[in-house]
Amino acid sequence: MRVTKMIYLIFILGSLNSCKKNEIKEELLEEVKTNLPDYKIAYGDTKKIWMMDSDGTNSIELTDAGPISGYVCWSPDAEYVYYASAKGPKETAWEAWRVNVKTKEAIQLSDFGRDVRSIAISPDNKYVAISLMTGNSNIGNNNNNLTQFNTDLYIVEMTTLESIITSGNKLKEEDLNILVSSPPTDQFWYEELNWNPVLPDDGIPVLAYTKTWRYDEDKVSYTHAYTIKADGSNNQLIKENEDMPLWDFTGTKLVFLSGNVYDFNNNSSDKIKVKGIRKEVSGLSISPDGKYVLFEIGDLNRKGGLARYSITEAQNGVQLDAKNVYEPRWSPVPIE
Image (cartoon, rainbow, N blue to C red):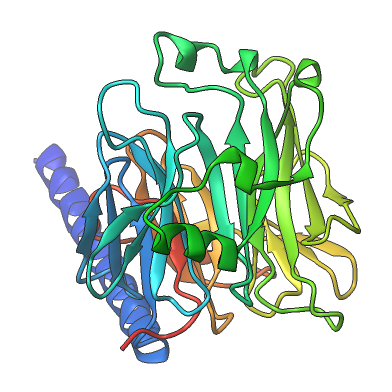
């Protein structure tokens, strides 16, 4: 009899807890939708590129970029979502692509024959930054030993890219200018690119990126976060042992994969804490209004999540409905 009562009590408590979680989720997502009604979130699921509303509803397939794709980013006017994809015959390298979010027209931008590791568009739409690997990971067993490769960081003017696309051609390596590089023997990777959305007083955009030594060699590898101007000046180490730097929309903070936040206004570091999520939370980014954080949940089959932004106390996080969410990114402006 006592066992039956105990099971019943556990059932009741579990039901109440589940109801409370649903109430928290509904309240938060309704709040986000009210405050950011026309903003969108772009993301990949490793094969397709998607766009959903700010509260994680209404997922729309932008394009099928399979068999494998990722590294999504927005154009500053939110007309395009840029990404890398190995779409094509077997052993096709990852190339740069973009898709128009309204017409769903996707076009291949590059023909390097080597992997594009990351792509980013400057806030004034003048520059394209590209991380380009020295090989093709889809050939043979190359992906099992990425330490044999390295990446260099390139930049190209948008007018050059548009002229090449208009003429029916694609970007080649000779069209690019080196921004950061090192000898292959040094085994450095320059990637995870993200432009500061606010132009500095001199009008020269600032790019955040990571420098990794011996990528994928977990026992000895390390990654540091840097910033650099589009003209190659002011190449500065910002934080050691930090990954995936993402600017907030005020251009004063960098949020890292770990949830750590670096504030340039006072040179301070804090951490965003999310509670109520059982799996690992990472890749956090601050919303355009500065009130919320978007993040990934888990590692292999990642989900998307949202929470209120705070560095003073942990906030309840909720999981979004989309099935698989890799590298979710806020649109820089509302989309009608």
